[in-house]
Amino acid sequence: MEFFGITGIEYVGYLASFMVLLSFTMKTVRKLRLVNMSGCILFIIYGFLMPTLRVGLPIIIANFAILAVNFYYLIRPSRT
Image 1 (cartoon, rainbow, N blue to C red):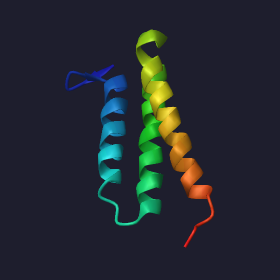
Image 2: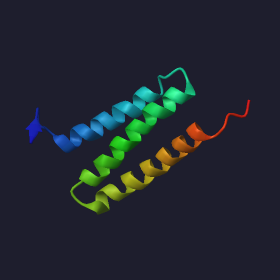
Image 3: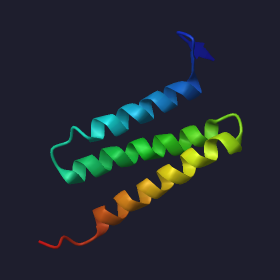
């Protein structure tokens, strides 16, 4: 299915990119990490939606690693 010549898979990729970009406008690190994590999840979904896993695997691996780092720093006790 296409809308304005863009496939649904591409819309997921654009939304993921927008979420990552939006995360850098957050004023608190916690919000930045949460919004960035949503972008990572969308990129992982985008990677699985790619026509072949060979194309999507680098996207999945990189964003899963970033998601794990964000999650770690969110649950880690504060050292202030």
